[in-house]
Image 1: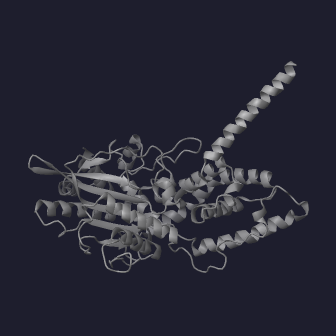
Image 2: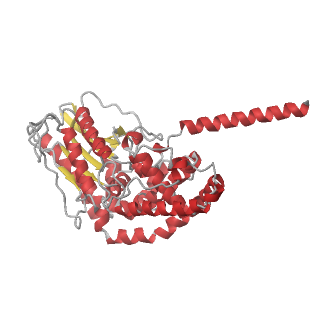
Image 3: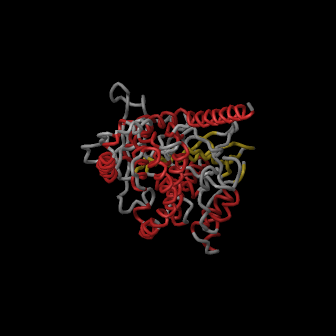
Length: 469
């Protein structure tokens, strides 16, 4: 009788554990765990405790907006299209080896699977979902800052810049169509024409600096063996789990290809019950972490060179704010000077820029950044981490720096609010996302006089110019 009670108790505990595991999987949405392939509508509301509430005083009015945005959701690149075709051939071989076993465990979709993009010869273009992401972002931006966007369009008032890569310039067009909708006379949507300016790919040090810096290209190439070594234990373990679970002799390369397919299906096709269903939620978490590691090492805080390249972009942002302040102080008519500078580029642009302004850092890490030291790698799940590619640089991810004028005793003080993916976020030097803006010229002269390197100069600027409001 006692033995029967113990068995019943054990089964109940086992059932409870199964229910907890099941509920955890039910609440898990793989579409929020695709690193930098995550769609914007999934990423926008992921917080990871990175965002903070921000209340702007009523007397403060926005006088200028800087936007740095990544392109929207894109199709797989030509190289990745070939990888998916190779995966189809590989699956055919694996399934041929178990054909006689007539397994009922294998998902039916694997038999005869072909890439959804079979027959495509070009890739990497902005798809309709990506167009919509940027169009809606443009609409929301105008709604959020109506005072900035009430003027008639002029390219000197609302300059729009993009890289020469088509998905970036197409994203700029989609954003502009949303931003200026109902402002023109073209078609039933009352659209209007607007200009998008691009620099040559060979000399675009503002938005495509990763293509112009030979030292960075060499560094990134040199990190490939290191990144592969970090990923290898995870891929090995998951490969073994998949072999046991599905009875196919998957290799680590197969795991990488299936994970890529999962990301493309979930992000572009909203399909999560095929390739993604081959993995458990914990395995997805580990695969996401390996992607985040790579992004951290070769595009983020893993090396100061990654973000040092972005200094010309940060300088351009600061200069635009100074010009806006000068125009305001000179009493120029609203709409006769620049009100917003809008830029559309890539993850390789947004990530370094986010690092330059100190986003997604713990307090102690800021000291290391001041000395251009590499940070420790994001901890492995189930440990919590700040650095998530799905948050830092999803498709259509963006940073907005809003310059406010706040009248006080017949004078104006100027403050900057930092928004990441449209939500207030603090810089590493403070716990609040709103900072006072002082002239950069004095610091620039001091930096020259004391031979500070350019990166530390800008960090000094952030520390002393973006003071707590």
